[in-house]
Length: 236
Length: 300
Image (spheres, rainbow over the protein chains, first blue to last red):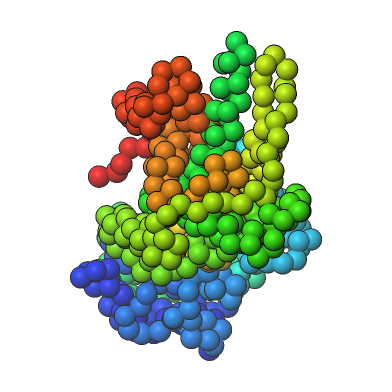
């Protein structure tokens, strides 16, 4: 049984059929990437897994449990955490408060503080800015904070939505290194990216989404050399 | 000079009551972008619950501060419950509807509480018992403050400090800030947005109820429509300070109270109610986001 198994997922946004029978799985310890153009349904898929968007049909299984109808705030407690598109850090709260909110469901104060320090080790730039309001951070720093905040709930599955969006190329490389490091620590990663090149370089497997459907599914290395993928997403 | 200082003392006392009511408006707006027009009526209910609680605890016979405190807390607690019921029954079902539906619902709840009050309590004013007998304290320079005013100021201040501590330094307070910033991001933290919204309504209603009891202490005639004007003015106070902004509500309330008392004292009591709306017009012309508000451009 895969750690995450999405079976025949159908999602509507009003009248728009955003996901059409999507099947996706992730094995424990993998980095799996979803690539595809704007509007292909990548963000919708992550939001449905997180319980933010209701599914019309199909189901989401996590560690053998059907979580399709579980509300978003309960899903975090089950071990799935998300760093959302656009980062969504709490701009009027400090870096530390953002991290503390990431651990909202946890009761082990000492463990939370330990994990917070671990985040500062993983992202030293956040340590320098721990008392600063997160709205004053640069885009890259906010992305680091969004990822660190998501990790504070000690997830076994981390959903990352466009971590490279609007960030300086040098920082993107750092952030991808961080993602690999997080994965090595035992966290499964489901990575949505428009930067297909970077995503395929760190992922084990990948899915290509087009207008709400999975059109390709393969090992990341094979996808990276696939002619259609190269033409459409890797700039030839 | 002594007259001015006297007016200032009265204005600040009166303003701190507006501030307590304005806090509820501003907190609910911050979290839901909803103007809860029924909020002034919760203030009225707070005063009536205080009236009944005074009876239950025999607070007017051998009045002592402990019994008065009990009356205040009972009113706050029961009103928090009423706030919870209002949110669950009236506002939650329309939360996903267009904002106008929620606004109309709020007006409906307000009318329901006012007319329900008329039915339940009758239209004749009731007398709030003297649970704290009044006496005056001289502050020197001819300025006098009543012990009731001192209580109003002390209780308001304590509640404001309590609220500040709650919002800035507790887990649930930080969750409130998170929800007010972004519902989706808050649920991704594992925060139950529904519970936080309900909790916010409860806190706001408790503060309004405290204001109701504090006002009834000083002007003991209470009736079911007593919440309309103070409710409107506290709303103006919240806009004045920058709606959604907690310190703004306090400053807006104080400005409102002082302005009202000064106008009554130096111009004419005829203009007492008008000044609130003059302030509203001025602030909307000069600084629409309010004293502490940040201008937000609506994305199209």
